[in-house]
Image 1 (spheres, rainbow over the protein chains, first blue to last red):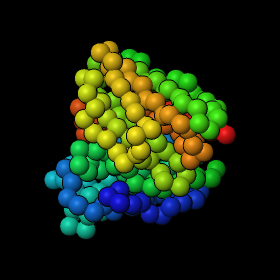
Image 2 (image 1 turned 60 degrees about the horizontal axis):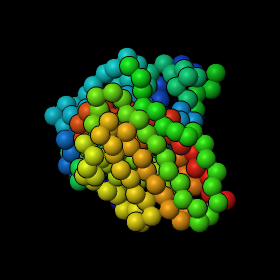
Image 3 (image 1 turned 30 degrees about the vertical axis):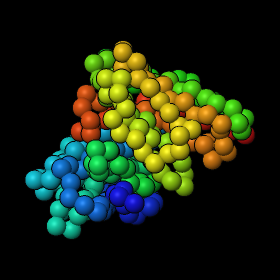
Length: 109
Length: 113
């Protein structure tokens, strides 16, 4: 499979804590994207990081990219119950947008 | 502006039947892609259409087909339904492909019994 692979598969934290999710991929990329999916609904684009960028911020989100390790991480700071969702990384492979298996995040209030 | 609209939201079909799902993209978006999401396989790419032409196709059997109309609305069809086709089918639209930001609909939940 050429999908990105996220870890952990599931993460449970208390409100206010930080959540870190990781994504690994297999070949060189132009960019890497992160999406969020609330239970059984459509995906929402969170952030895109290009291959020449190492870190990017958007609100409480911080994304890093290490092209030498072919990996990315998504950090959500000061988590809220509303952050409970599945998080997916996505990369381009062969002119397709390919998604990883996702990390299920549960934020307990 | 209006988001991506998928209809119907829920569908129950019997094995052997066929089904057609519809997707209306964001106005101005010419690329529409379809994904199948299941607990076991995750998000699997089905196909992508741009200006009425299928440009990319995933590894699905020929029972899965699609089309795009001149107004960019897209339909996907699954013939001879199997139990394993039960899934959430997601449509995404974007102005370019591969998308640097794909906008997803809420999905159609298909249950095959």
